[in-house]
Length: 306
Image 1 (cartoon, rainbow, N blue to C red):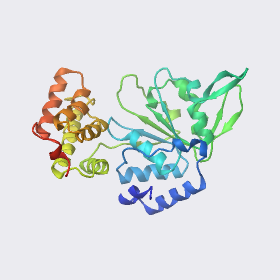
Image 2: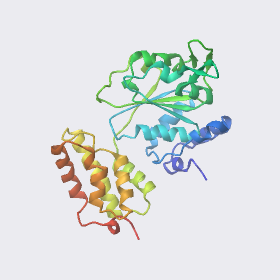
Image 3: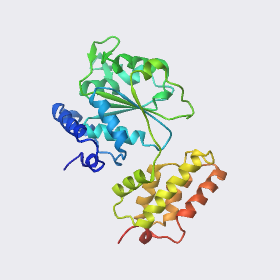
């Protein structure tokens, strides 16, 4: 099985693919963390973005993926870890995240104090890809401990324990949304340690790639309507008519999957899209968009080929 075939299908630079294959051979995954190498549920579509990201990671740089909701930041991060065949370690930042959560804390084991290693420590130890989700929600004192980890020093100084150097295959990928409650501007010292990719909005081409990869037997008309539905909602969100709550690609994919079990498409889409909003006025707007794309009389037979 060619795990990089989806890169070839998108005509990603063959030299980059060749160097990725060398990387995978040079840095085999330790047996104890192989279960952390996970194939993403959704392949990432976007030749230019993939090429930028792969080139940066091959160079040994860390990445910061910025952009609004539903641009595929986490999907890209998961795909990159899989492309490079690395164990992934997810850290979801919030206002209460502290340095101990990242590096580790003391714990009492077998009558002695030991370090209970955090995700960043394990990522450094096993050459993993650390996915720093919503990094702009973290307090400065939490991310400041990452400065030496993310720059040329590539090390972690654990208070009370030895300093450790990062495994040569270790990389960090941060993600950040704009304007979410609790988010803030990242300081210059942190941003300078990343190469930044501004993620573009979904297009008809990217949505078609994702939908076909997940549901190969979608009928052409159904495929067209699901793509149109997402783009219609994306446009309304861009114009400020609705929030981004219903702009949920995972929800749309899940709704399509539920239809396989015989649920009416309109009901499935309401579960996966419309009901993500809890504001009655907004929900009515979303439902109007859904009903223009997904007829009430549609059934499973209208969605999937026999």
